[in-house]
Length: 97
Image (cartoon, rainbow, N blue to C red; front, top):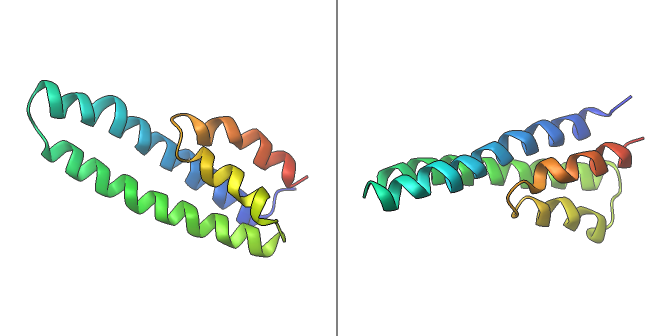
């Protein structure tokens, strides 16, 4: 039913979205409340790597599924918004049907 590249994009989007929420809701408060900036350094690095992987997976979907730049920009922009990858997941699933 779902193509492999779409499935991969959705899984990576979920993991990337979780890492973004951990960065915003756990690491950032620890940085400012406990004066511990190293938590943001580690979490931010992991999130950054996951975001790059997400962007590459999105590029693959864009090429394989012949998405326009406008179609591909929707999940890319959503990944920059807290909870965005979770909200856009249903739309990505529908694009593959």
